[in-house]
Image (tube, rainbow, N blue to C red):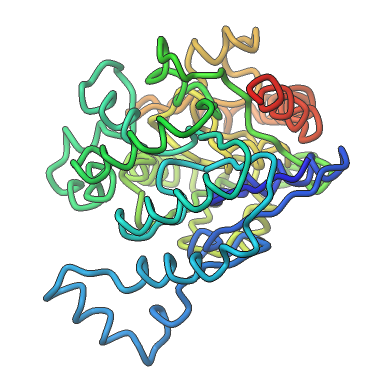
Length: 381
């Protein structure tokens, strides 16, 4: 089959593409590379002019006085000129409802062109969208990325792009995509919860991880246990970074001679993935039920990852608590307790590390996951 993947987050579509290529399919990705992360892509819509130094003041003027983002508009224009190359695909998959990340009216226009020039379109629920944000704003679950929005007034600015997904413009785009896609696929349990009972929900297909590209690193603890925290300044409240930082300050004071802490911010993917090679423990996110893509890749390397591992996840994969990762919570005392246990029991780090790698190979193998996508797509064609 000829497959077009539109949009990229956290290397999700790249790993899926690699699995599909092994199975003999023709696959292309069109995206902006996810900003500073710069993931590999086949067709780029990156707003190079808008982010250039020479255009900086012009973009800021339009943003401040006209509330117009030249960068998102430029992405749409670049996508428009790619349209002749984006025809004749058997399957098109959108990474979310707004995968081109341009103006709402232009996004809808461009997606109409994609629909008219290709066979079938599917929607992936792998990030915020109208359905998930509406669900989370109704506070139907205890643990979600929206918790800081309700609890911390200082965090509200970070959520402006999130709550925009329930605006009238976004709702209109959602309805258009929803009506024109064959169905919606969830990438992990966090995205399953808002879709339960939805007639277009096609099921969960877990994230694909190309573990052949990720070398397992057996934990070697010579003197200090190394803890890594990676920060993206644009979503740090959603990840619970405040709680991780507070816990690390206590751990550092309690184990000054036993622990080394590494903190990295806003790194491109190729640098980020190597930046925690020396770490034994990686702090990922506090508000999830399941692991995100960064957490999965760290688990493949053999890191003990603090991430989502709620009972829904444990039941789905028939696991025990603390078997393949550590369930993180927005609770400093809880995090300190879990970190303290690992520092005082380094054998546990080795045990969880081995389990984590085995779990990725067993449940997230990129070829196995690619086959699952093909099965879903074919059943709906």
